[in-house]
Image 1: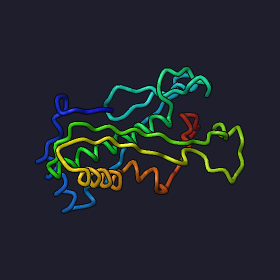
Image 2 (image 1 turned 30 degrees about the vertical axis):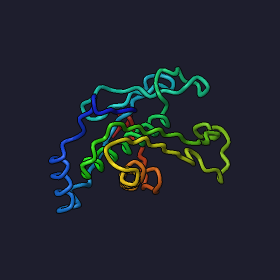
Image 3 (image 1 turned 60 degrees about the vertical axis):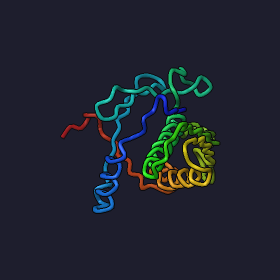
Image 4 (image 1 turned 45 degrees about the vertical axis):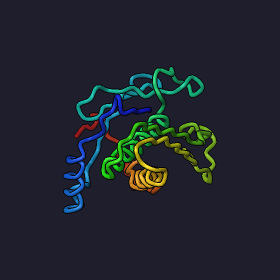
Length: 183
């Protein structure tokens, strides 16, 4: 993702200040529930629904038995990570009155998928999923290198998605009966 000032006006600095003040005054205001719904279309094709937006497809590449019509779940997760860092960069720059001319976040991760969704190598000592993530930020604006580094460090430190990746989250799973219940 690349953003230049000719195409990008930034965000509403006063709106950011109001939101910031609201969350400082009442930190519980920042506690929300976010939701998505995934419906398998066929094979490894999944339509995903978020709020009132058009559904978006998540698939798998051919080497993972998919049709390669869309990014796979891990690629979407890395895109979400990069987007969250980008949002933080813009917000932090806005709060510091730094005009940005370029924001680009490249994310790559090393992943172990040898368990093959629970039907492959099931060594219980294995750490599945992405185990190493590298975030490369390109940030240009009307500030010195030290300020741009502080903006970057703050955006990464306070990113909800970075913290989702780096801290354990409680996970609860339920199986709905899909209407098969005879009660």
